[in-house]
Amino acid sequence: MAISNVVTLQRDSPRFESILVPTDGSALSLAAALKAVEFAQRLQARIVAFNSIPVYQYPVYVGGIPFEYPSEADYETQCRAIAQRYLGLVADAGSKQGVPVETRIEFNSNPAQAILEAAQREHCSMIFMGSHGRGGLSRAFLGSVALKTLTQAHVPIMVDRPTDEEIARAEELMRQNAIEP
Image (cartoon, helix red, strand yellow):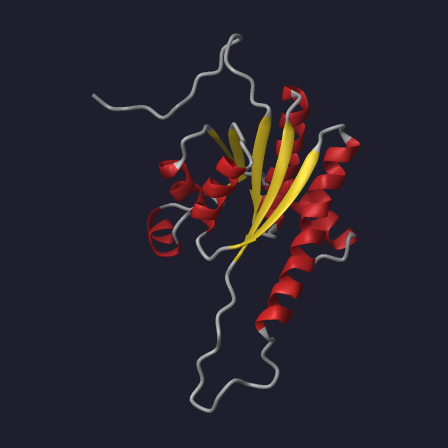
């Protein structure tokens, strides 16, 4: 007998009061995050917009560290500033729709693990995330954060695959706010 991880929502189902919305800085994840804001508005839920940044990697060169390579402190400062601008777009969308949005940034080189830990730490009852929808060899070689999160999560996950039009709107929003898509 197969075990199903599909959650059926019924009128008397428990409420989703807090939704974790992980983003990676791409237009695709922003498009999914904007949908999550609309979803949260309908559920009267709060959003925790989350960005996991890879941990600093020291360069390995035979001749030493190149002069133009940022220090760990500079790397973290620059990455945090970029993530804050990006998460600010989600917070602004929430504000316009009356959805409370908190933002969280974490340095962790395993994004699926970071997402699951953040959902638990923030007491989120659902995760809403975007996916590129890769299959076959692409998924095997590149991996899928959404798939890894789905297989390890203990809360319901809504995976969204934004349309090309939704991604284009997210790219335009990013450009308007001087963020490179």
